[in-house]
Length: 241
Ligand code: GLP
Image (cartoon, rainbow, N blue to C red; front, side, top):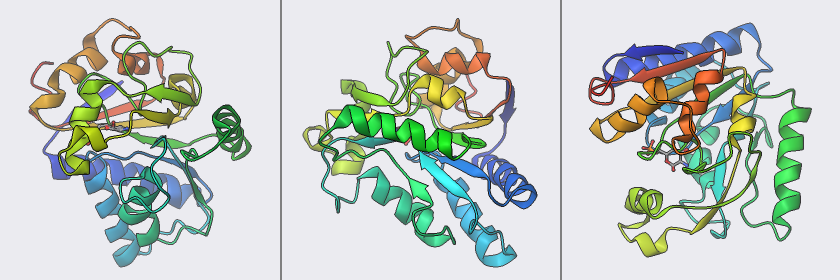
């Protein structure tokens, strides 16, 4: 695990560099996209490079980490719509090239299995962008998630719903109670993991991620077993290292 401590704008550039290197070497690369505020500066930087320097996503594909269950198709906080707004519609992905778990599926188990198959059929994820929750969750793998888990339905913890209430007008009751999320084993199968964390609120989670014992109670600690992880943190998030 490589840990880089730098100011936030520099972290975004480092993450964008990794994506750009991959896409220039292999235009058909498969990216893993995360929601949350942590990757937003990376997406802005990638859009800038697309617009100003011709970085192309035209032959690439992307898979999202997770999705809320039950949000209407046009709900602005549905992760599919968030990813569309933050990056997919701002670069030149081909139609259908960005996929996410179907949070409106009737057959949830079938939808999760289909999603795993789609990732495998694409050849797996080359570079996965990740954030981390204050409780150490990655994607929506909350504390207690099996380290061997695959895409499935999960209940969101109160903490995560409170953390995410800011996206729902500050009202925790508007935050869905369930999600579909790639499992920890799904995420671990990506070839390069790039995790971003900023702010003091992430300090304990980052401490556990880098220095804690591997435990389902801090799901991100499973990344210690991955051969190629880049952890990008600012001073505040690194303050407990
Ligand atoms: C959500 C997402 C995660 C994300 C986490 C942290 O729960 N499902 O993928 O990493 O929030 O979000 P933020 O980057 O906004 O702190």
